[in-house]
Picture 1: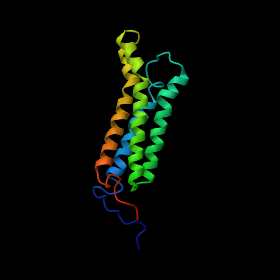
Picture 2: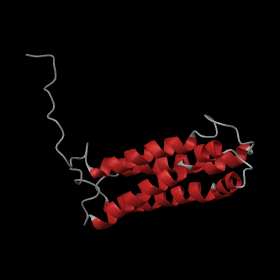
Picture 3: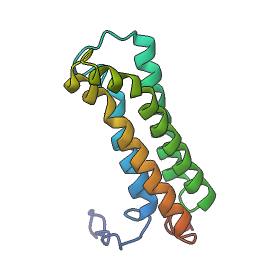
Length: 149
């Protein structure tokens, strides 16, 4: 009798542990985390903290919650697609709210490094959302990975 557990076999490609049903939500969590931190880890812009929360924290937290929900509800195509569209909207939100900052940098009112530091996460979240939505839309029901039990 062994007190050690049986070794678990490695996950097969496309399994729930490694399939696309987990890859896109994990990517969304990564870029959302990046989107949350610029106001707190980087150059100061002199923007009101409530605006920083509205432009970074709120959409970033929404993306994290959506991604975690998508992982928990793997196998439900409509949830996978709706999550992708919601992440896309959050990416659009972050991107659009930073267009005035880019305009200020173009007019030399703000340093380009600071402007890019605050603005680049938005297009990254948007790109993950679009890629996720395209995958969910074109996969023919397989985008969320295998259905649980």
